[in-house]
Length: 113
Image (cartoon, rainbow, N blue to C red; front, side):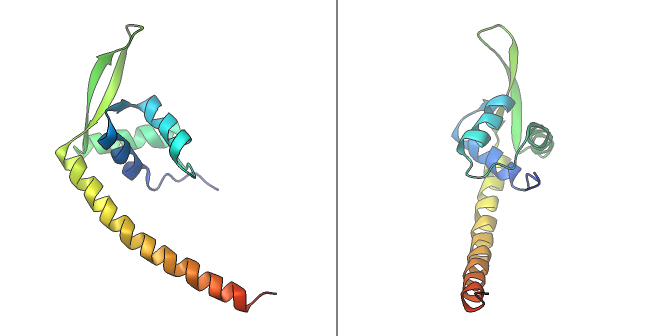
């Protein structure tokens, strides 16, 4: 399957609602926790930039143990609103996808060639 990362913003906002984080850690969370991970580093960083431009997230610099500054990302009030909107939209999508799955299963059962 081709990586589209269509829902990348939703997952980034969700993970940042749980805790502030940085790009590499967010990417690792996607790899470790998503059942099917369509997100690569290019998609992730492009989406972080877009969300920052939309004021859904903000960033700040934090010094690491090695003394290198790390760009951290934090959810904003606007980001919390976007996350709520994504939740409502996703509920509607799930209803449509469940309808598709049910209809497909019925069709497949009646056309078992």
